[in-house]
Length: 207
Image 1 (cartoon, rainbow, N blue to C red):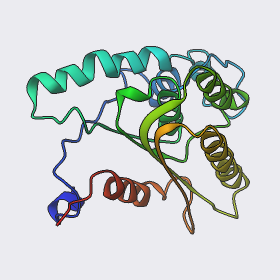
Image 2 (image 1 turned 180 degrees about the horizontal axis):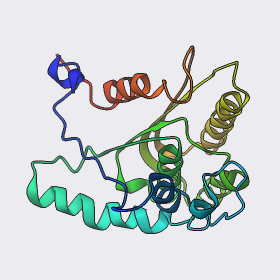
Image 3 (image 1 turned 90 degrees about the horizontal axis):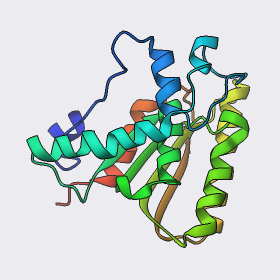
Image 4 (image 1 turned 135 degrees about the horizontal axis):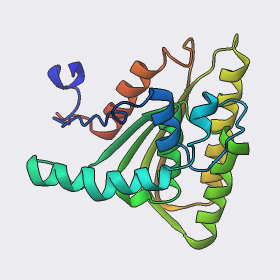
């Protein structure tokens, strides 16, 4: 990565988990990244994708119980500095992990999360987490574009600000929260910039 090559951030191992083999990407993303079963989701992908939705819990367990131990076994990894990166439905997954099993990662780079999913179920999950926990030990960086020409983008930005408000209202100990609305980008173009911002915040190279 250029950020590492130019010595802007610390050396890092980048792990990409592919979609399941032989699956359409929208089916794989919907099944693995969504927290609840929502077969009639109006803003979801295809009907076939929506019918397999709601398996974020199992996918999160897969990351925690298989992927991370595999990396530890074969590579020189720092288990105290694990970073999650996800955008759109991937950002929804990151938000799910953050308010259900935050200990899995140390840093969360969450881009344009689909917080609208299933009547904003993530907000209900965060509320449930808050009822039993006073701490949320994580560095969460949430980014979203604010394309004024796209109503959906604007609503996503509003959802992110509402999520920020909810998180801050709990006064969780251990939570380092950064939220930014990135101007002059759209849902697809915003990712490179938010990735750079997130990595420079998570693992800056101290000179």
